[in-house]
Amino acid sequence: MTDEKTLQNVLIMVTDISELYHSKNQMEYLASYDTLTNLPNRALLFNQLKQSIASMARKKSRGMLIFIDIDHFKEFNDNYGHQIGDKVLLTVAKQIQSICREEDILGRLSGDEFLLISEDIDNQNAIQMIIHKIQSIFKRPQQIANLSLHVTISMGIALYPANGQTPESLINAADQAMYSVKKSGRNNYAFYSQEMSNIANEYFFIQNALKDAINAENFSLVYQPQYAIDDHSITGIEVLLRCTHSRISTVPIERLIKIAEETGNIKQISYIVLNMVCDQLYAWEIQGFKVPPLAVNLSRKELYADNLILTIHNALSRYKLQPHALELEITESAFLYESDMVIDNIKRLKKLGHTFAIDDYGTGFSSLSNIKTFHFDKLKIDKSFIDNLQTYEEDQVIVSATISMAKKLGLKVIAEGVEIQEQADILQRFGCDIIQGFLYSKPLTKEEMEKLLIEKV
Ligand code: C2E
Ligand code: CA
Ligand code: CA
Image (cartoon, rainbow, N blue to C red; front, top):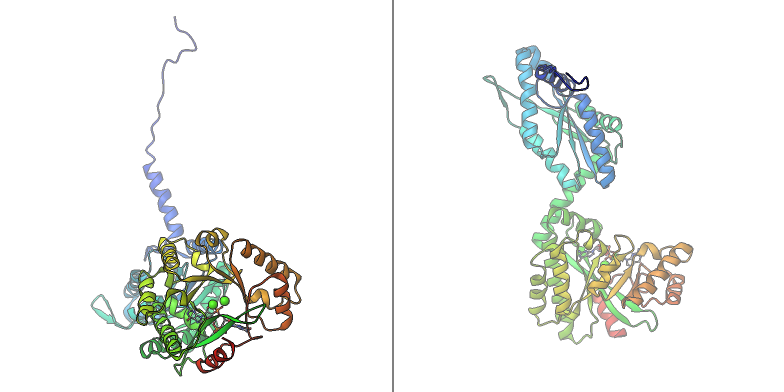
């Protein structure tokens, strides 16, 4: 007897779907890739650009889009036939891909147009590097099927987020830039606007001049005194760098420092500064001047240098100067990436006897825990909070809260960029200790500083 509910037979149907799977994949592939070059096609590029933009927006990073168009492509087709035309396209695609970073995306937009998406481009230097690498490919003729063909390209560059924040607007900007190259003779590149293009050229110019300035040590120092708010005595002097190289002497020093950071020349600059500072300290010492501590700016990038301590130590020990003669100013951004090297350098320099001031306080990433752990000595409130202190109540709240917080942590407070008496009065009321700014003194030359030292100290 059989129980009706018992399973008697099982019918298994097996269908080979591998072909279906294959053809589905094939369809997907065809919808997204260009069959000649195997690069992403317009549809996929568009999607990838959209994703890149979203990711850069999240990270607040910058990117670049290059629109690449082969010059006179039609002539290859007309003169040598379509097969050679295809080979030209393949060669261009392969060559450009060979110099791309792994994370860059190269795709074929249509016909002889390609698009290169580069995410997270954080400086002009990286932009120039990619452009010059691509350009160098097309300086020599390409070997294509027994032919030696001179292929050149025109490139239009759009920057995210400056030139557009959607795939459409960025592609459009890069396209326009490319078009301007075609109009002005091809085989070149252009940024979306003339302004951008000027900036890039200027950047190159400054970068080269700065290298010359470093080699020739074309630098000088100026000195800005810091005054005790109550008795107006000079408690310290900030040393500020000036470049004396004729081609870039009018470029703001901040800009030169930033470029030096990007090109890796900052270590040479700090070496020059530290040695000039110690030369001057020693000269003043033997002339009998009583000099308060000199505050030297250290770039965030310098704090990553493994030889920073040695550079400072050597500069001081040439003249047997004491570490407390040099106060070190570092900005909050030094702690942006918690690096063991930075932490170690700061701890060791503190132990040696250097005092530290947190510069530009309030403009960056403020971590109270860092200030507490490192036992910094001074906190410099950024000029941007001082500028409107007399009019903005909000700034008054921030400044007074910052001062009381700093005091509780045992730090002295310097207000930077004080230009008018009203600001000084408010700062005094809030309990600020030291004032630095044009109200009392602009940065001074060595001679002017000496005169002041005679009068004041
Ligand atoms: P910083 O460290 O914040 O230096 C203070 C800047 O504010 C100086 O500009 C100074 O001249 C200016 N300043 C002071 N008081 C006033 C004021 O009342 N009104 C106005 N409008 N400005 C005032 P400077 O000399 O152009 O330096 C700019 C920046 O360049 C510095 O900002 C610092 O970040 C960097 N820098 C200068 N020298 C060096 C250096 O030797 N090494 C490094 N790494 N950076 C340096
Ligand atoms: Ca400073
Ligand atoms: Ca500052």
